[in-house]
Image 1 (cartoon, rainbow, N blue to C red):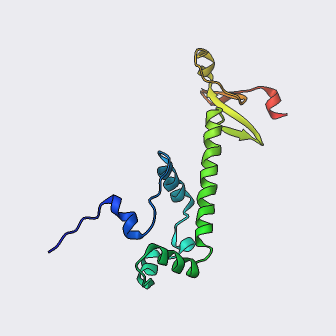
Image 2 (cartoon, one colour):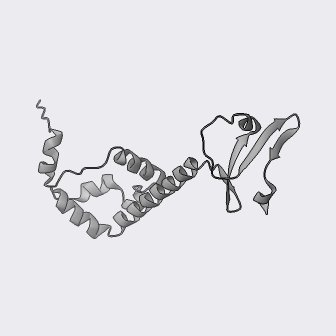
Image 3 (cartoon, rainbow, N blue to C red):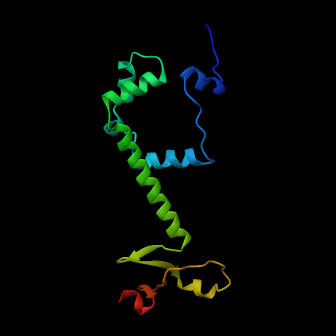
Length: 150
């Protein structure tokens, strides 16, 4: 029985390609966006376990050429799905940063418990109008500025 070890630094050379470098956390964000966007599902990029069996080459460049000939739109479709998901994530994070919890029509709003008003010492800056809610015996009481629904 024989065991070999391939060092991470040797992989780009063996693949005859250059090592990629990404900013910190970029790969995790891209992977998460891809999972949610389902950009690498077989319906988008093909069934990889079958495709790799069909491929007779040995080099990464040969795989790229072969794959793109077989699935010319797949990478663009997958990349677009991931790009849209990352942009959506960026929009959501911007909304969270601004204290936006939802929308009434196209107007952003923040939703807080009525007790939030008592916590004036919070350093949070909320740019959106705030809806205050309070649980009461028979439901929920909501307080808001009337201009919000005009």
